[in-house]
Image (cartoon, rainbow, N blue to C red; front, side, top):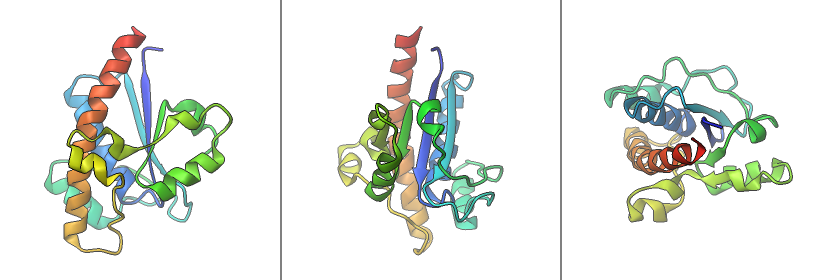
Length: 165
């Protein structure tokens, strides 16, 4: 009960969700909470299992000091609904996919990641757009959104951990 776990979810687990995993992990480590927060990412589509994040994702993240090179894509599995306190979808499509497979009593764990954004204009966007078919600027935009929402998520997780002590 003294730990909290977060799963970030996009479609292929090669762009948005590994970015969120890497950014949030860095923020959790900087806050001294690495031993108490379990972080992972997965996709609702299994076509990229075992692959590293997209090279453009890694390049954009590396430019901001985040190393995603050790991450590998995986698909969401039924056990994730039990293992994770939050399953944070990058968009409504993936949220709906998670909800379709959610066991009874676990749907409340499925949420949109941008609901945790600290800036209202970002929160109002509701979705982290998929940069896969876009240019470099789209990957930078994903990082902007993920960094913003990670701040709010860190505040939420810190409060949850305080309640669990």
